[in-house]
Image (tube, rainbow, N blue to C red; front, side, top):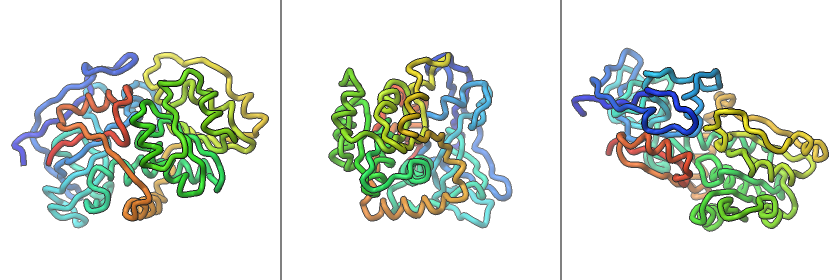
Length: 336
């Protein structure tokens, strides 16, 4: 164990896109677990787009950070001291903890990890919150049927890449939007997407979508918003379903963006649009984890992590999400 603990703190609310001035790395003592807790040496921590919302001083589904708070998110690590009967030293667990070398977790709010299934970083991606978001968002909200055309924005990200593969497993035609040729090649050559559109290389999203999905769109899984969503709404089929999971194109906006009014485009197709919060499915997390684990173990579900090395680089990894640096799940490697 280290003699001290490094922790990242939130020290300044951003205006528009965050920068490194929002973060400060401090040294502290290694914390001690209370009864029922475990002290975890963090191996990997997660950075996620939703964290941008926690930087705003407004009420939302995720409690906002106060200036001076320790930054926190999903972590996976090794128990180095246990005050719980659930875990022994050396066990691997995942839960919600600090951006730090060591963090204390309530054992009741953690889940065990099997490093032989997918590897440790997978428990922050395909076998963690993003995978469950994809599972419930597509199957419960999108309700895909064999033969449907499913379109995914942010398709090369942690959630979108899993959505597309589950759609393929359900007999759907899958089209993804992503931001580079490397990403679109990964979608079609490795993940089994039927078509992929590099939105940075096309001027007319609607025309590109007509080519990739000539039969229209039955399910749209939206991680991005913005002009991509504007284009998809014009291609919705009768009884289409839209799952709104994220709007990363707008997370740094200071005002409410305006654009084409979409509601009239829902009338003729009688389309359903539903927002998605994975926490609503907490009582069924076990179901999703079991199925996702089986698909990973059998090779039916592929995953990829973009790994930034070093706790000191965690803010850079977070900021890189808004530049589209990651392919698959963005994680930070904290320790060996």
